[in-house]
Image 1 (cartoon, rainbow, N blue to C red):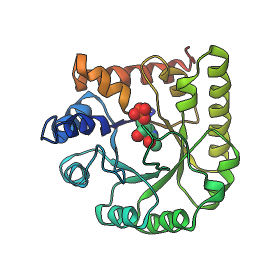
Image 2 (cartoon, rainbow, N blue to C red):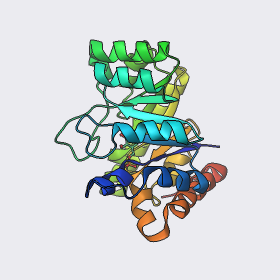
Image 3 (cartoon, rainbow, N blue to C red):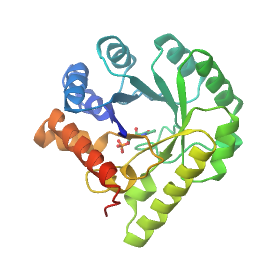
Length: 247
Ligand code: PXP
């Protein structure tokens, strides 16, 4: 069964709008777990616009499912991760002015910092993934760095304006996933996935993990978080068992 990681960044976005205590990150985590999250995901950004260090520590200490930390490959973040020991780290590119993580890492021209961070975290027993665009050229470099997994950025697929463009992006994801698996890396996917577009990606047999945040938290406004996660879980499970790529 494909794993569903629920990203809680935007629970913190709402809380940070008033810099208060509500909505509570642990209450959200527990609702997500009851709804069927296999693991929790947070992105501790350098600008701390949503998730704070305290959130990550609370989640590490008080939740029962694995914790995956998205972060930039900086020495400060690597030291933080080594101390916190999340179950997994996904390295992402970070730009201060972006609304969200707009693209994958350029692993091919990987900085020394990325190489050092991957080595240090692997040495600390933390599973490491690299967030990459659906571009096979990135995979050889990712494999050379010794990463356990790649997470394929599905943003262009999700944002495609026409069905033709969406199919084009879907095929690129499918091909990248197959090549990554053939190279021995595990394959995750995420970004911009929602209740309407997730099935096609969830049905890809090479993809073993999906990480989804915004769409689930947005739906939770109307259904509650537990139900929103449950509905996503159902869609993912149905797509995988039917192996039927739905539009
Ligand atoms: N995966 C990665 C690596 C991300 O950076 C993000 C966004 O933080 C997501 C998945 C989730 O994206 P979304 O919130 O659009 O579902």
